[in-house]
Image 1 (cartoon, rainbow, N blue to C red):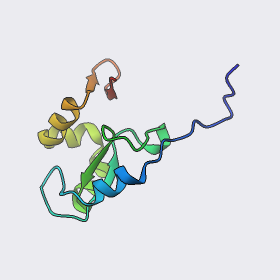
Image 2 (cartoon, one colour; image 1 turned 90 degrees about the vertical axis):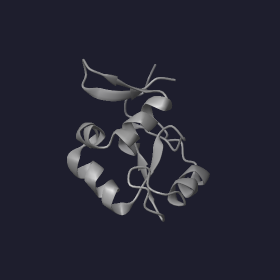
Image 3 (tube, helix red, strand yellow; image 1 turned 120 degrees about the vertical axis):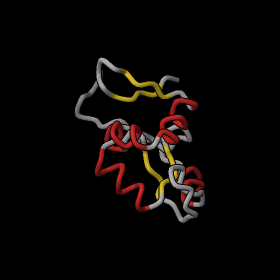
Length: 101
């Protein structure tokens, strides 16, 4: 039986986060340090996986949180293409992006 009171454990990988911090921003190519941004949020169970963590400069990281992922991806196709290349698909019925393993 599943215990709904227990929060699922999040996968934590400091190596993935360090790599993201040392890369240039994927959107504007500004050189680091970058903020690691989780496409599936940590609160929603998104772990530190290469397909889920993207490097964004502080300006782009602030903007994605301000606009929301869908509007940000409409504005910056480079990140959308990066996501699609790694297995993300847009589920039109739900209006959300989902990772397809």
